[in-house]
Image (cartoon, rainbow over all chains, first blue to last red; front, side):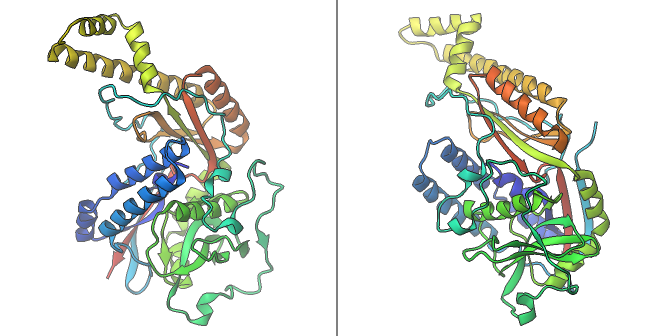
Length: 95
Length: 332
């Protein structure tokens, strides 16, 4: 399916507007793990591994991601605790 | 890690091919436009929530959502019961003045109803979900995607990235209100545009054989190495380097050629990092709805021309790669 990566870090998302949290997030970057998951999904699609083999990989990688993230971004409430302090938009450029 | 939705020249660093390694020989040409959705269920007891088969292209004649008569600004739902353990999972943002329902296709073990939360002409497509962090398992990601696919049959969507849960309906209304102008602009820009994915894989062994055959230096060096009892470390190193750079320029040629041909039928394109060592291109294209057939035809003709490459062609997707809205959230 190959969409995982786009779905996790693309489109509309929230970033926590705190220096400390930004530093934390950087230190706890899980992109290597996500790459691992993506590759496993690709191999599943190409028929190189079975559903069962994929399930094992997925379980392990998800567990590792969970360890890193550990509820990094919980549910969002807008007020009074959480406020949107900035909106940053990028979209395609028409040529 | 921001991923700017850059136009087509935004090539990101492609990892250098590593020294030749043995890979399973698999030079097959995949049929263009595989039936993406049908392969997306992993059969873990979610059969009931499967989307309609998508052999048929979503068209304007297919009504998926059911408009309900608007009795008031609120929807009767979980939050009216004052539950504190239920939040709202958000899938995407659309433009709609009418309250919509999309059926029990929500994320989670027990799929709940998917409906809309409104602010003026904007609507967030949501379902009630437990207030806990959702793992990005394939099943969960597919559930998220399935809802967006359903919604985008009739609406232009700004997809939400996976796993965003709000505490209450009011929080979502506040989100829509505080970024209303931005959402309106992006929805306008994305009107009648669809994203398609195109991934190209090659058989690396075969590519190695080809460059060995075609490149005189490599060919000579290979003979030299295999003719000796104990080839020197240096000769092997040099051989590896030559192979790597020959493969690199060959794959770049393929990619440039393919992109060039798709340029005229797409609004924008984006190159992402290839996944694994067999992928030479991982691209997303933004296509105007009225160019879909033309794009489709182009992909098919490219796939038949490059019959040694494997093409993975998917879509239509919401514009994940072409909209990037970051909302800075200040937490007390």
